[in-house]
Image (cartoon, rainbow, N blue to C red; front, top):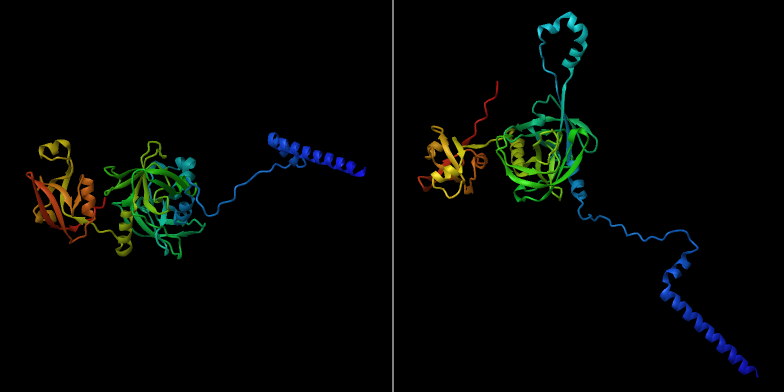
Length: 391
């Protein structure tokens, strides 16, 4: 009698368990949100999943590693010039006039002229590369390093023809910049400009290379500028233009502006040229350039047609200095220079740069066009005379 009752109770229990499991399955399948809310109802804390931090990995589009590499090598330069003796007109010595303005005039006379710029540390021993116009007229030069230290600097040498100068501070173990080959640059490459615009402090701006080989700007004697739209403002002169790896590709030098501020057209001296000038100044105190003694002009389409040239390229020799290197080599007025040492001449600016890069007493091969005939000449390069100093 007890056995059938026991079996009946066990059967009812099994049915209830099966029904409960089925109910849980249905709730989980069709009301999963309700299930999760029941599980988290006891806590008011929102459970959020955070991504694991990525260490030492550059985010896409970030140039922080390049900046960290190059920024310690960029310095701020503060220069001052003592007020020059400027004799006043006679009326300024009148007692009545000076009664009202005497103190102001004396303060103005005693006020030194101040300017600022930037520079790039190129050696651990304290050599700094900057623009010549930053330090040219300075009586005192003060350098502010990225670590906050300030110290005076002296000029090692300058090259006004390229607007470059090399200065030195007495310090060791400094963070020196790494040079890149500016010959490998392409229009469209991303670049970063580092400097001290308007004295606000070290600043980084980003842009691209807008053009290469810019010349005929009337800025320097030898022009082969990198053009960039990275913001360059007053105070950036002499600062670094770097690539996305933190290597130096140019020295920021000038801007085109109608307002005094950046308008997206900045110019930098290529690092390859800057390194050549820097090495000569460091070793011999000045820069020596090649010279052959000619005057030249660009080939216009009209001149190209009259000389029966296929392209308006090269440089027309307008004059030859008597007994100069070109004269001794047989070059004549009316000849057209096509190449120097196998490097093609596109215009007078490129011709000037190619000749200047030659060493004095070097024998250089010239390719010229004369009377529709191509001729090869060998010229013994002379030393470029120093420009006459303005009096």
